[in-house]
Length: 272
Image (tube, rainbow, N blue to C red; front, top):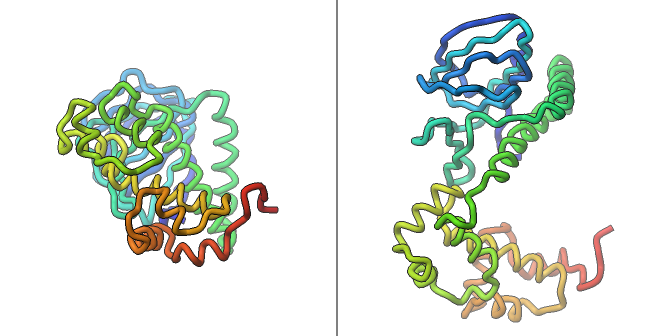
């Protein structure tokens, strides 16, 4: 798990007009009733009919909710959130990186009943606070955050943007033998500028993303082929096996030899 959990504060179904500063990291689901909505003095006009709202402590919100209002509120724990420099964005600490996410994620109307049912289930689990039920609440909160991330992925930068073009190149590169600075120049940008654009768009530097792609492919070759570890290391562009082994250990917390012994399935086998 990511370490992010929380507690449901309940469901609100009354008409309300208010202006307040959040005193907790907030994850909310507005299913209906929102007439007016502004964050830190910026008006959303018009707000979506139904949406998730994610905001850091101290965010100033102003709203007008009608009599058909229905919204659930979760106080997050274990998360480190802060306002982003861009409006309508929030940053969340994940591992060693700050990830930028939208404050508002629209929810299609046909999916609203399913999410309301999910919140009812989480509420029932929280009222019977056995360890397994509190774990169920934590898993549910993860699922909601996953929906926000999925919504963000659907709006990920176009391949026509500089960061999108670099990511497309990284996704296609499986030789890992070219210098990233040379690639940046070919794309028409200085390495520093393009690295910064990539980090803002995706939450990590391009070299870190490339290393993760490299290690994901390493694990796929270990589990799904008959290649030796030295062959895999060479195929991934490592000149020294020790460098490959060190990178693999940092990514998966075990040596590649142990991964081969535990997980090798063969080129045609599948786990049962």
